[in-house]
Each structure stands twice: as structure tokens, then as C-alpha cells.
Image (cartoon, rainbow, N blue to C red; front, side, top):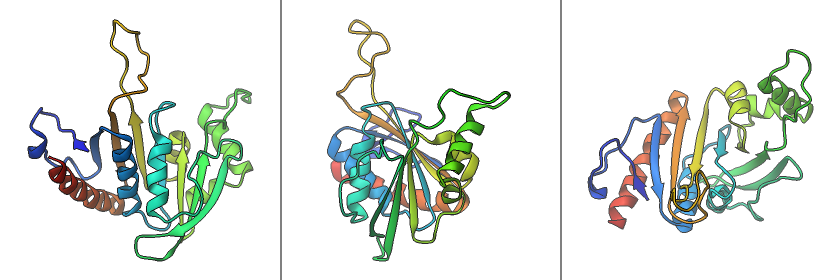
Length: 215
């Protein structure tokens, strides 16, 4: 994985960005799984991780690495038809972990009450599903992994990791603004909350070490 900086410099000379934000270039599916595993090694009970990106960007591949590193029993697939799935595994320190995997793609709908905005509607649906308290105050042994939930997480979880995966577009002569199924992905990771920013800094250090090994 190649860490992006504002200047174009050789990969071996890449520098760490600010501790609250990091950008990465992820060339292969294996690298994407490895990135998911690397994030799993820094999460703790009570964390909220928001995963977003267009269809086919690599969210499921990232989640597979995340789940494998947490020793989750069973496949890490988007819980599209159940909204949320509860899985069990272990944290990096060996303690039991409960992973609540939420897919917010179908939440919200289009039937708004007068004066109701999109975020309010989404929060109402979370409350009706009993997920609002889960995001607001996760249990000490629980990690919430939410897909498509940036707006809800921002409203309910002021301390969180946000991970956004992008994939390239086709060349203009091929198609305009059409996402390619091939090629490297770009991943941005943001940490909100001082303690999470410190852990993101640890992740940056470990990724830099991996990058030097790949050079």
C-alpha cells in the first residue's frame, strides 16, 4: 500500500500525514484485506467504524480482512436484508469481541414528515430498530461496523473512525464519470476523538513499515 502525500515523492520517502487523517493507495484486493486487518488490530471495545464507498469499491473485501483479523466466525458480508448482523470474535489482545455489522443503505426512504430532513429521518429509523443507543454508547466488548452510515454516525457517535474507499473512473475516451472495476483504490481514514487519533497514528506507523517492506 502506498501512502499519499500532497507532493509527488518516491514511495520510499512517503511521510506520515496528520494523526487525524491518512490517505492511502491500495493496489490489490489482498492489500485491501491487509488494510482491513491492520485497522482491526487498533480497534477496541466501544469503537464505531464507518465504512463507505461506491458499489464495487472494495468495502466487502476490506470487511473480510477486518473480520479475519478479529477471528470472526463466519463470513463478513453486508447484512443487506437484515440491516444488522451480530458476529463474535476476539480483539488483538485476546479478549472476546462482539462485532455489530450494520448496513444503512436501505435506511431513510423517501417518505418524510413535514419539515423533516434526511438525517432526522435516518435517526428515527435507527431508534425504531434499537440501533441509536448502540451507536451512541457501544458496549465495552462491542465494535460497530456501519456501512453507508456517515450522516447517522456523525450525529450519534462523535468519536469514530471513518473509512472511505474510492475506485478510479474510466478514461474520458471510454466513458465519462463511469467507475472502473479494475485498478487501484484510494482509501481515506479519519479519526474523530483524541484517543482514536492516537491509535490512527499507530496505524500510520505500521503502514509505513509495511510500505518500506514493499518497496
